Amino acid sequence: MPKVKLTKGELKRQRDALRQYERFLPTLQLKKQQLQLEILNVTRAADKKKAARETHLSEAAEWGGLLTDKEVDLRAWISPHEIKRSFRNIAGLDIPVFEGVKFKNTDYDLFETPLWADRATEKLRALVLLGKEIETMEEAIDKLRRELRITAQRVNLFEKIKIPEAREAIRLIKIYIGDQLANAVNRSKIAKRKIEAYVAEEEAA
Image 1: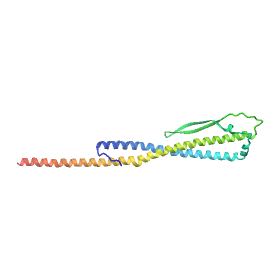
Image 2 (image 1 turned 90 degrees about the vertical axis):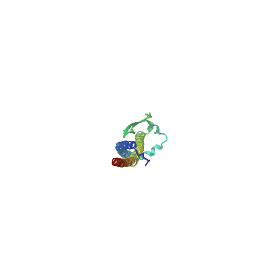
Image 3 (image 1 turned 90 degrees about the horizontal axis):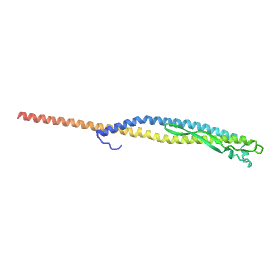
Image 4 (image 1 turned 120 degrees about the vertical axis):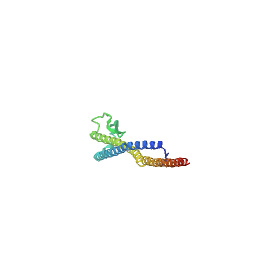
């Protein structure tokens, strides 16, 4: 604990600081809870999307061997043209929200392109979409966790350091000021008795 000035001015400063800490602490605690809840919700949602992606991959395995056909390159058909995202505010933090993916419109010859290409493109686009959605969710989780770590540190700082230090400083200053007042009263009484004794001696003389 830092050295405290044992003065009335310092007492006021410490009381003001304590009131400020106690006023901000509930807000920080609420923010911490909101961040924890949002991390839980987004993590659960991401897990569901990952499970869906695994299902799509399993289904795609049936025709995956066809992708080795050098005459058909689907990469241009499944390449995202635009990734649409927005932002949502959670406890003062803006986190990304996935809105969708736009794919390039690619023309192809219906007679020369294998029949499976349409179905493969649809499945692969679904996988790409899920991948981008999961990326966005993981980015949101990372931001939420960083903010939670900072908020938790502030909560601990207030709860375990700042508030106890301010209370202890107030206690020490009040004891010191109380002792000073008691000493002043005692000195006053001694001085009063001396004066009374002096006056009594003068009157006797």
